[in-house]
Image (spheres, rainbow over the protein chains, first blue to last red):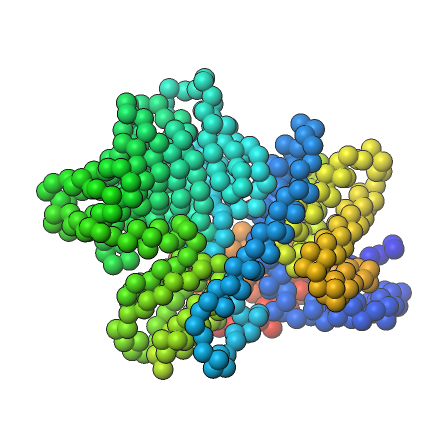
Length: 394
Length: 180
């Protein structure tokens, strides 16, 4: 092949006259198989090209991550562990299918012929993934990397293992000053992190946490946004402080709690599962101390005492972390906000959608069409177009 | 090695993904291919040989992957179908991967001011308003750039810089983003 078929195709697609030999080569190629003819057909389709270019674009992150993985391997001569991961991925895919299937069986769908959204127009559920920002500003995408060391920060080795990020501080830290890292989950992703003190953090979609790579001072302080569940390791000498929006803070000794600061209904809600925490707000006259099962609600810009509710259903609060949606008389707008975060779509309402409250539980492993069916049960019509979900009341 | 990696990563991944239709395993397959190349890199003289080695390695890994998947699912019929990615099909996919690569490169070579406009409006299908906000320029300004970008690409038609024509061809055919 002196002139490759790709060169000739480019000329051809651009309407440039081919030389006789080029023409001949092209014809031979087309006649050689239906697949080739089909390929040319695809290349002439603007929608296919557009989608392909977009796909191409989305490779940037994994290319970078892949290079780090590859260079780590080839330059240190570590054994190749990739194949093992392949199998694991396959197993996970099957599990996911099984889970989705189970959910479909569990929903009380009448045998009414539900309109199935076409396979090409559905959106997969959120997955595990996050973006790690190192102290020097470097960003590392964690959704497609293999297991292994991701980076070294201030003497702490940052390891990725089965979609969980772990900090292993060494005895020697390079700097007495804290180096801050942050972990951000975009819409459609959630992630787990083990902080250098052993505390565990779950990040829901569209959330973030900023923390030092090594805890150095008298207290352990982190900044969070969105929704996080934390299991804080006990270190009596060093209290753990969570800063939520610059005004609201949660002080902890060693306990498990969930902070939801999406403020879907205007409130930042902190729910205590175990232990004891103190919630303070710049806009509230007094701090409150929670006991397990209690929830504190703070409105950021409103001067009022912190509201405390008791006997909270913690399973419902932690549903996201345990892999399901749990709506308890939630209005449509709030449900929509959860859908937006988990499926990375935009939800818009058309006409009067009324004041209906929705109740139900479902697996977060279902694709968006599952949610669409759920909404249909409430008499909503949904249409999906370019990641915009339009909801209309029948 | 880095340059080689950067040059071939996306075409190979695109290729693998179009064969097995799954992203993550495709990424792994591409990584393995690079590792295998690295292990026997002394044997290669020409870049064309490296390229063909990488494509072939990826292709075989994809065959193996699909047949493994199929046996795992224990759907015998599917197994037969899935493993029937024939060479012919794989080769046509390789041509597509290469073509998309060339077109992509041409977009990348546009002046950044116009490239961003093209990307936001055309590739990401943003509205004029969204794109203007993303670039932090006024909507009017964005419209001007958009027109200028079309003009530049149109001029390329005369200049016959091939792959940009492909892009132009797309832009004029595309219905949506170019109407406000």
